[in-house]
Image (cartoon, rainbow, N blue to C red):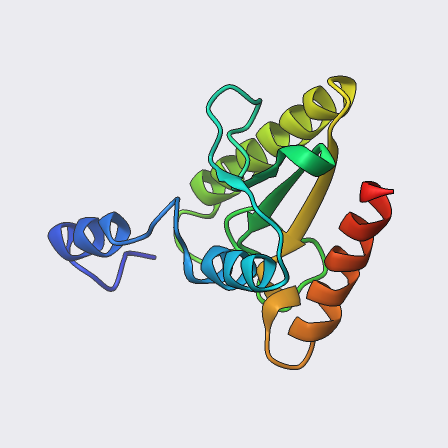
Length: 141
């Protein structure tokens, strides 16, 4: 099965996909800031360059896209029908990197919170963010 787009169109589309400052990440940051939490972004000194670092709470947050990080059992993670082997290799590589970074951070004494894109949909957003705020409040004590 061939791609529905030309090589140039596909290349342009893929170039528009961000790795930082994604909409889900901005939603989480906005909520945390409004709740009084202060953080750093994308600390290169930490394994996996976490999206959000809360040094005061010794906590890092990764905001994962369900597709790009292979969210198992999620309706937003669908394996592409074209170049399936390539995509599965790419996604499994991301999953492996995520697991390695999380393990390394835990060994260093950091709490790791993973937020999935599907947990930021309107129906569950406040529940997800309340859970994180409570977790951080407990960590502060």
